[in-house]
Length: 138
Image (cartoon, rainbow, N blue to C red; front, top):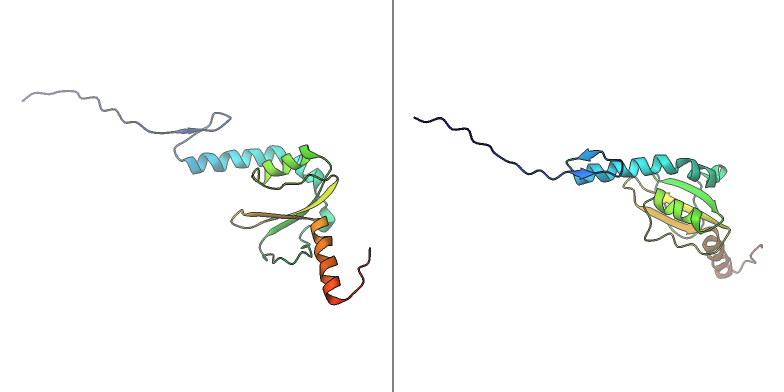
């Protein structure tokens, strides 16, 4: 009988967050980075929010869920829109080009994000009033 020592090598993929923290699962790394990004942006987002309108749904012909987080923001420039995009992980949309602008954002429990603007709501109400034969109050 012979005794041998064998070294076994095992490769493990790890994911490294922007601040250097290590994760074995990609989803955990994404979740951690999203949490950190939101913590960092929270003061900026809070300053943009119109708190008095929180959880007030827009009149735009769409349906909104009971369990959604609904907030209104006033954005004055492209940089503020970019902050909202980063916070809500909505870089591919939230296309606002007219400033200042009032923006409604709904975030569902599944973290789906929907938005509309106050101008879109006004347009919808004008069309509704016109269809009803009612003069729109400006």
